[in-house]
Length: 253
Image 1 (cartoon, rainbow, N blue to C red):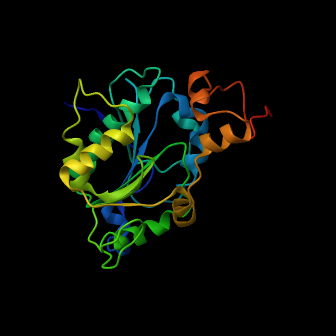
Image 2: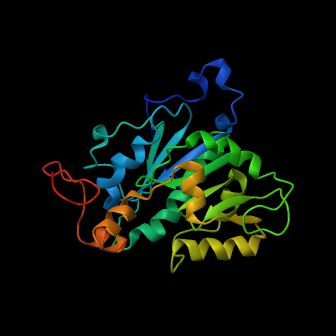
């Protein structure tokens, strides 16, 4: 499947980086940020946390195009964007997330990235500098997380919300995802493929990502602070609206 991508001028890519940054481990990490229409109002907080990130950020979108998305409102150093080309449905983010992982993984492979970090546009990463340490963790000789044996490991993850690993492994898994496939949830599908392929995966709970990378699921925080479920914020049309501004407690300013 041929996917159109758009190269952004903001943010630095490899051939634009200063020479002293080329040896930085982060130069080998391609960051894949997934998104869908019902997240847009929370993007500003998630994407802003990447401000001053000097390397490659790839933003995927679960829909047919970016029309109507106020991209000029956000100030992330996004290097490149792509859309899945699939219409967003009621629960389209489930399959849509897998399509973004498949297409995004192929783009990262083609750009030559050894590692990848998959997160979401409504999620912060204030401590992105610590991604360097995750590169080392993959090759840890001693057990980490929920493992009883030492590395090397293929993936470090919490469901599909946070995944860090080897780009080759991501593409091996996602090569089996195609039109007509069914999944109860993206995480269940990924777990099944991981077992089939013998992928060595390390599990960490959400607090570990919060401590390590400064992760905050902004949409989840909004829902919790307003006694709502996250799914309800998808289903009731809580999209970005230029005429209204909201804070994280949900009160109109």
